[in-house]
Amino acid sequence: MLNIVIFGAPGSGKGTQSENLIEKYNLAHISTGDVLRAEKAAGTELGKLADSYMSKGQLIPDELMIDILASVFDQKTKNGDCKGVIFDGFPRTIPQGTALSEMLKERGEKIAAVVSLDVAEEELIDRLISRGQKTGRTDDNYETIKARLDVYYNQTTPLKEMYEKEGILHAIEGIGTIDEIFGRIATVVDKVK
Ligand code: AMP
Image 1: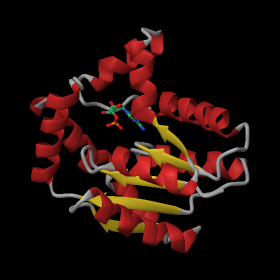
Image 2: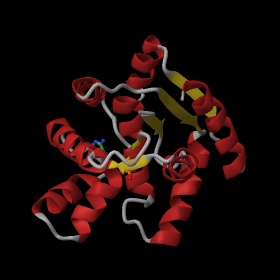
Image 3: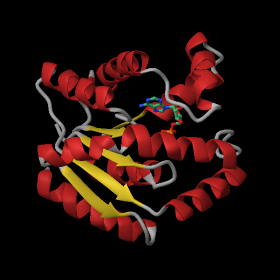
């Protein structure tokens, strides 16, 4: 299977580029943020718990997130009709990264590439504020954006070093048109597929 981690700060374009990847390579999409927002919208206990972290820009605890990820992965891949999976918004911590590799190994799978979208902080803030205005997404307000970026720099970026050591990190300039950025991503994916 072609398993890709799409990595980057909030607002770096992970969701947008995931859509392009799904279409071109026939992949399943696992966005942990989307999973949690769907739980919130459905009013489940998990959704309520998740919202208590999401609304503050904090991460949901690792153990919970890892369990959710494994069950969503099994559910999305059970029919065998996708060629691989895009992990969007997971992993976000070193323990999540280790758990993802283990979960895949147990299933005879591995990560083919980690595509890291690099975008400067000012641009990220502009994009997120504008997304909040367009979509009404409640964590896209200035205060929560700042908290999410802090979490990203402190808890998530150490994963880059981990994947760099494993030789699977591919840094992509995340500035330009959606098509230009996707062209850069596709060049990487075509080499590993
Ligand atoms: P996203 O849509 O990926 O930006 O995620 C929105 C929010 O959901 C994050 O700010 C976190 O509160 C939560 N979340 C999503 N994915 C994870 C994850 N892998 N680990 C912990 N929390 C997560």
